[in-house]
Length: 263
Image 1 (spheres, rainbow, N blue to C red):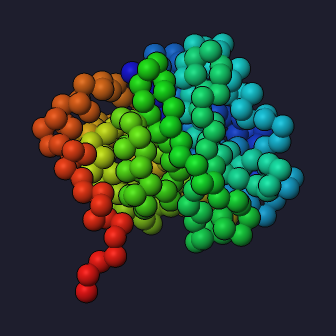
Image 2 (cartoon, helix red, strand yellow):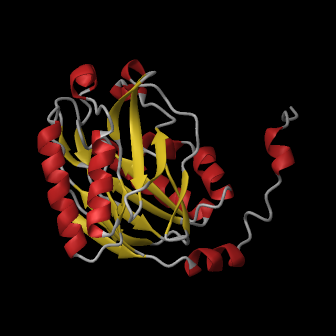
């Protein structure tokens, strides 16, 4: 599987510009021979949360855009996430579409980030995000979710061998980004494909450094702080090899993790 990590700037509160920008990068990634394209978090609007009534995706526009592109170019797309208007409110939603244009996963961000006011404007999701691309079992979470190791472990326990992480991770905490992603790869013995945005909005500067991390924790690809596409090729044999060398999943003791601890 050849993966393209699309590290792009996002025009604040300007969906039309962002759709054009995303399409341009996606076309470049196709020319680069990618099988899977991965976009960053909230690529349609950025964190223009106070204007979601006017700006958020309605009627499946982003989903249709991704589906049409995937079908036309015969590629899978992990569609980062978009701000979306749903019946119960606004959500931070990831769509995953396969090469035939079918939506194989839809995930609403489970952990909302209070420091960027997500909890004031968005509704959280409560379902896991598991899917397959060309028979490869995968999962997806969004940005702040990586600070909750039990959530990614749940996906790994359900079979995910690749976990995708779109983000808008601020530059001042980019060291946390690197360490957390490597830890999630090592402890779950899986590939982590993480795509962060670059640029800034009225309140934040974002740190880039999109990464692909192997199950042993080694960084296979890391970008800098500019707009660019990073490519990495992964093989699932590595997941099986690492899980065979250190059988973490076989050695888990689920019964002691949930019972009350003795004082």
